[in-house]
Length: 242
Image (cartoon, rainbow, N blue to C red; front, side, top):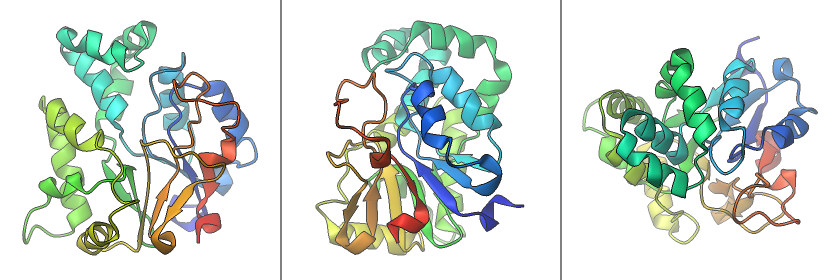
């Protein structure tokens, strides 16, 4: 069955907590769900590359690229960036593992910056409209244009620009008019994202459900992880957000 015909499961920032990811997805068999990761599978936790491989190999799965994946690929290409990457949670053994795995590198560079699901839900890494810089007038579908430009940057040394866009703080929670303009520009009815941790036990829902934050600090290695950070704050079925 094609993934677009399956109910969608949204997974917030995993940040290397592979054991907890196994636990979180156990109730959701891959052949019954379209699993959508919002990015940042790597860093903080010890198993970032393992999380990437798991997501890549899981059937009916879509992975949106996050700023931590960009930082890791940047460090791989330019050793001068390794120190910065480690300062944001990068693990040396993960970089060494990625360096040895050319196929995983190629797969990661192909991850989209945006995905619009069949019901009009837009999935992106951060709750910000900075992606609009990659749109072009009369260039066809806005989402396709953004995806193509972001992928080109990742292929040709444009990590600095990608980092600026993908690491922007959530603004959609406080700026409903800006959010509405972004939804109209991308022909979407709502947007789901992570990146900026929320403090709830379930995803944070803003402006009548037009914006949804699924970064519930999933990884137990995250600097902001709390004992009260439940899986349900980061992993949710799309139907539950309706």
